[in-house]
Length: 280
Ligand code: PMP
Image 1 (cartoon, rainbow, N blue to C red):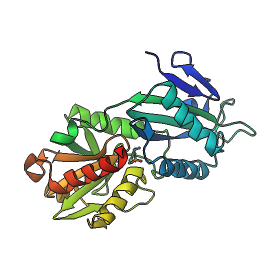
Image 2: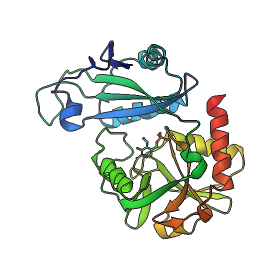
Image 3: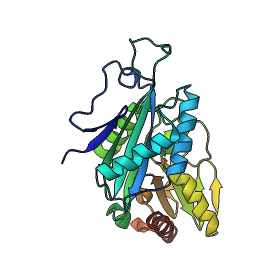
Image 4: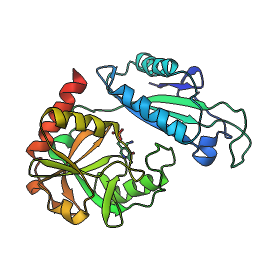
């Protein structure tokens, strides 16, 4: 069945949902996006996603395409019109449509597009076995804190990982892991979680933020510092977080088995806690 998408004020079947060839998202990747999970027909952790959208837009001096209330309505309408029970809502804002020029065109309206994607988030079979990751060079620009639609480096990194039989690529810069191509990266040593501190080098994941809250509530220590692939190979456990994967265990990094190739207790517990909250 054709999905119903939202394009600049209209809800349309996906085959009719079109944007201009002059849209600056298409020409320059001049736009930002958000992906919000949906479980049991309800948005999960919606407010942090909208806060991050607000920041991404302001860092790029881009106008909101509509009011915050209207954008919430777009999300809830997409769920209703598609009878979406579990999956994600993708939305992007671009600077708008104008003749091709690098500088910002004057007085154009930003464009807004949103659509759903059905996905199994809760019963993701990968969560039982854990996934493999491989390291790959981080060749991105230096404003990774902005959730820009300019995703060619992550596309190449993810493809590199897939071709090596892995589910995710952990990107490496100056000898340290920055993050996954579309997720944040963590190792566990003993009962302590280690992850890179926020900066312009990584994305401030909404799932990362939720994880920090859950860890604090359950007395799990988190240390924010850089770590190398070599340290990760020897970790007791490893995992990644993202809006579509929540807390996903990792059982192999660059061919090194983590935790004997089994999902470990800290990661298992954190995923359980996350799902408990998200499905409540
Ligand atoms: N880092 C990168 C590079 C990402 O693309 C994503 C997912 N968009 C994340 C981290 C995780 O962010 P979130 O938990 O908000 O999905």
